[in-house]
Image (cartoon, rainbow, N blue to C red; front, side):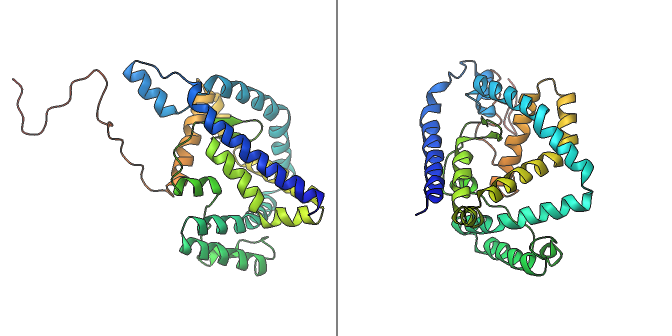
Length: 273
């Protein structure tokens, strides 16, 4: 085993260990409110580490202001839309093997077949992913990551967590990111060939491209929000919940119609005394 491979596997194990420690330690970090309405709001936001999360969020905002956002603005200014689309197609194509592995682990053979088909078509006819030919052929882009796989396997909902630089997540998805990095064939190839700089460049380009895609949306959200942190948390949680359900409608909670400190509505056909 090469030293670089050992470092990579050690880093993955470190990610797993950190994630497991977070999972085991978060339960005791919050005291839920006793008021029924406040407790319902507390459980809905699922953010027991909010004070710490807000501090990390503030640091991330500083990094975004002085580095990530300016890089994204330069990227948009220098590269026309067609150039940005080309880069995005190439980056997405490199992610397809990980998507296919996770779709397989989630017992989704149809989605796996579509993803494998997309990778073959775009890597050949699409010239290494430069063109997204597969979408035009009816092979729709699929989703699949190990955080989603853990959810399918029954991992319970985990608390909201803001990661340094990486941003909004949760312990389950943080562990998933570590696993996805470990099973990524292209990352493994770069490590074996002692070309880690290629993987770093890929990571940076992907981050800048993703930030560029939401330049206007985040600016408007921050400008129009009384609490930018809370608003962004809500949107991120909704988006991730939809990804986990693959767009299916969310289940209705058992106590959805129970309003705290209010009498239950009369049943149909009943009369008031």
